[in-house]
Each structure stands twice: as structure tokens, then as C-alpha cells.
Amino acid sequence: MTRKHRILVLLLAILIFCMPAIALANSAEPPGLIVAVANAPDDLALFIRFEDGQVSLRAQKKAWVTYYRFHYYDMIEAGISGDKSVEGATLLVQVEGGEAEYALPDESFSRYNNLVELDIKRGTLRLDQNPWRVPMLVVLRVVLTLLIEGAVFFLFGYRNRRTWVAFFICNLLTQTALNAMITGPELGYWFIVYALMEILIFMAESVALGIIVKEKKAWQTVLCTLLANALSLVLGGVLISYLPV
Image 1 (tube, rainbow, N blue to C red):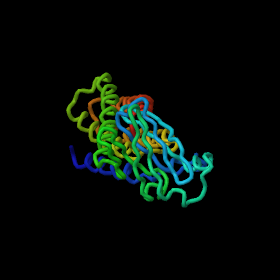
Image 2 (spheres, rainbow, N blue to C red):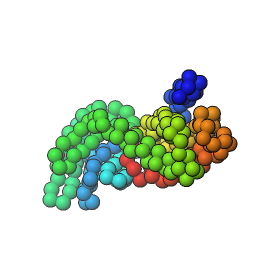
Image 3 (cartoon, rainbow, N blue to C red):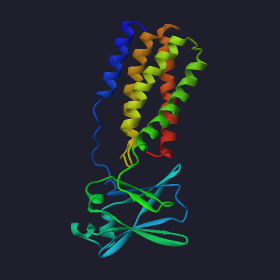
Image 4 (cartoon, rainbow, N blue to C red):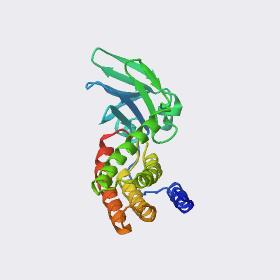
């Protein structure tokens, strides 16, 4: 790779990692607490028990992880009111064969989108997530994107080693940044963020690959890049909706 190409890749990296975060107003209230359970039994039910009542957590399954969500307005619906009600709260776990109860420190309700991980087999509750969780999910989604877009480039007849080096470098930079931004237990209107970021990636990758790749004409490379990103936008959005975040 020539000096000019290295500079282009560096500029691309700066563009992607300096993209401002997107703020979305008027969204629904995010969960106050999310309990993530890997390989949860079908009959698993979770409740948060407060001093003057309890609320049931809503479940949403994504691949091997089930997210149980608690919203602060659930307390009002259950007739529980007052900030002091969260003091001494416990997580009640019910599954066929018995039940268990875990103390929830006050930090569990310190903000929105608090995440804890419940391990049913070990009977443990983590107030922080596994440090490998986010990198693993980012790598998983980036690999899927590379497979989708790589298939398009292959079908377009790109075989030159230099082309594929440029392809992988550009996509690793852009897709890693994108997937790191949309990784979290609850991201309101995540598809809007995902789509807007993809539009910026469309432009960045088209310019970079159109200049760097010499195997075919620039307009052919730009067209291929746009089609590859369009396909990954649609298929990637579908895949992300079914995968843990």
C-alpha cells in the first residue's frame, strides 16, 4: 500500500471514529434495570420485590440471551411509589422446581439501562457484565458483515490481493466503529442510528475504495461498494434484531 493510500485509510479511520453520537428525542422511557439470562429456561419468570409490592419483568429473547426488563413506571402501575421504595429490593427468580431470591444493591437503580447478569446454573447474580461480552458481540456482527459484503465483491469478480486488503481494512474500521456504537442492552430506535451510520459508511467506503482499488474502473468499484453496503444494511438489520446487543 502506497503512502497516499495509507493516508486515505487514516483519514477514513478519523472520519468514522469522530462521528458524533446521535441524540434522539421523544423516545419511550428506557428500562431502569435489565436482567440478562443466557440460555434461560422457557418457564423462567423474574420479579422485583419491593417493600410494598412486586412487579413482573417483561422478557425478550434474542438468540441465546433473554432480557428481562423493568421500567420505573411499572412501580406506579403496581401501586408502588416513592424513590425510597427501591431500597432493599430483591430479584425473585421462579422456575419449575423452586424459586430463589437475590439482593439488589441500590446501585442497580442508579440510572437507566442498568444491566445485571443472572446465571441460573451457578445461582449467581453479577452487577457488572462479562468483560468479553461486548467485544464478542462486536466481532460476531463484524464477521457477518464481512461475509455479506465480501460475497458481493467476489460475485463482482474481484480477485486481486490488493483489492481484498483494502476491502478488509476499510470494513474493519467502519464496521467495528458502527457495531461498537450500537452495542448495549437497550438502545432506543437502534435501527435509525444503524441506518444513519450506514449512510455515512456508504459515502466513506465508496470514496476510499474508489480511489484505492485499481482492479476495475472506479465507477464499478463504487457501484459494488454501494450494493454491498445496501445488502449488509438490510440483512445486517435483520440479523441484529435477532442477536444479543
